[in-house]
Length: 187
Ligand code: GLN
Image (cartoon, rainbow, N blue to C red; front, side, top):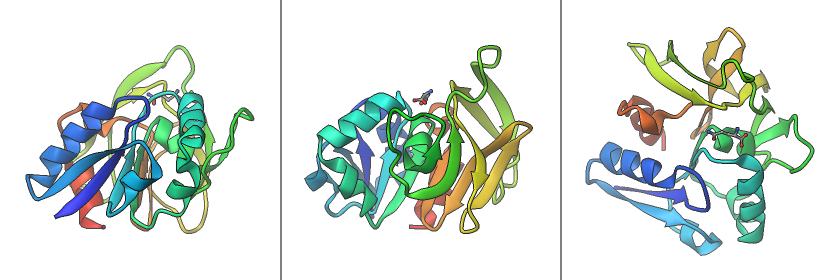
């Protein structure tokens, strides 16, 4: 079975733990990651939604920045996690981790569409995915090694890069675990 770490510094950690426990179906384990040693033996790391400036500070303080940058497993990054793994963001208060070559606009949907839901066509899924966006980021550009798997009118909302999956919405909140399974299958 696979061992999935969930970054447990801030944000919707328990929802991610629960979703991966269900997706693994008893074959594997889910562990909280709070310090570099917690990543040992992990096949994957989930970086949850939350507040990306706070998360960036906590990642730096816990010594996890270099550990995550050199992590060889797959990264499942959602919402604030998408901001953190990017190479470029429209916010000078912190340096993203630079793991996936995407350019991110934080809080891309503004006040009127602060939070919304949409049925997305996602490459690799037969049926649309009901996606929940909460003060979501969006990618405005993606590098040549990045596969865009979903967009909405405004821009890119889901990508894959090797084993990594990066989503601007919250798949851990909707009870639909198809994206978790797709991610686990690619590890
Ligand atoms: N707007 C948040 C940020 O950029 C992300 C929101 C979320 O993770 N739900 O940090």
